[in-house]
Amino acid sequence: MPLVDTLGRPLRTLRVSVTDRCNLRCEYCMPEQEYVWLSRDDLLHFEELSRLVDVFVALGVDKIRLTGGEPLLRRHLPELVDVLARKPLQDLALTTNAMLLDEYAAPLKRAGLRRLNISLDTLQPGRFLQLTRQNEHARVMRGINAASRLFSGTKLDAVIMRGVNDDELEPLLDYGASIGAEVRFIEYMDVGGATRWTSETVVSRREMVERLTARFGAVTALDEPGSTAPAARYALPDGRMFGIISSTTEPFCRDCDRARITADGMFFTCLYATDGLALRDAVRGGESPDTVSKLIEDRWHARRDRGAEERVEVRDRTAYVPLATLREHPHLEMHKRGG
Ligand code: SAM
Figure 1: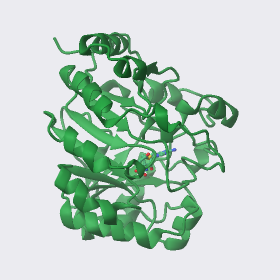
Figure 2: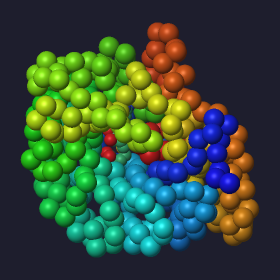
Figure 3: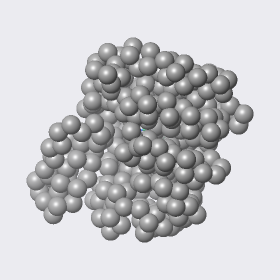
Figure 4: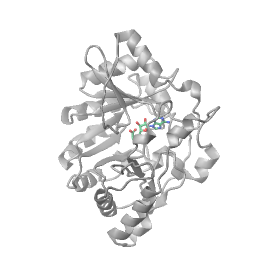
């Protein structure tokens, strides 16, 4: 019997955060000057992660995405990829801001990484600096170029914010086409470190589709029965495809088969969940796979999360977690639990 939660949702996708450190300070994710970091001793070692992933695979997980923080800041990451690539997975992907991809694209490919999701919110160097506090746009573009020569099926993810980069829908689509990557526009979410979130800054899926329709002509929504991917996919009249992740205005919790593990082994069953299940001690302490599996099973069986859908019902919506609470409970940060 497959493991399902109270709404009948299976556990199939795991986001594994390998570090909470990041080399960018994106306005919508890490806008503060100071953060409380995980101590290095607390991070799961690769061997511990491998054993934990085996337990998840036995429970039905067949898609893994490495994330962070910026996952390429985790030392020797290709070694972890090499270990995970040997497991029976349908997909093994990595989410990155591409700052270090020029150096890592080839070792990751050799290690068996199948796909990349690259976050790129702007094609304008000055805007990149404003948005991330790092003057490194050229380096990111070099990283993306290196990766696009080696990987196919790359997704280019852009968080769209009104008055910040919402004039770049078309240039981003053009750029994606030029490197053979499918662009996904992400609605600005109120979760984690997005302490400056306002509903006015959100550009909804509906508005994005309207704008692209006005520019290109009819945009066709693709029918993808059975898909649990977070993005709804569309085609432009010229055949180019793109996706929109509408977690803020039209979420899709009923299909959500995703869970997250933080770099220190905390298991979260929803991006909005406030209580995680600490698995590190069980894994580090040498508990049997059956014991660790039972902990995960019990948590997933009891899962009722519909975090994003519940947020839609909130009137006068502001940031989900106030800054003071984030400081007290850093695991609520997006850069800790993995976007
Ligand atoms: N550093 C890596 C990267 O930039 O892809 C991985 C971690 S990052 C937290 C993962 C994804 O979460 C990125 O695509 C980022 O844009 C997205 N993200 C972070 N905060 C967000 C927010 N408030 N709303 C929407 N997406 C967000």
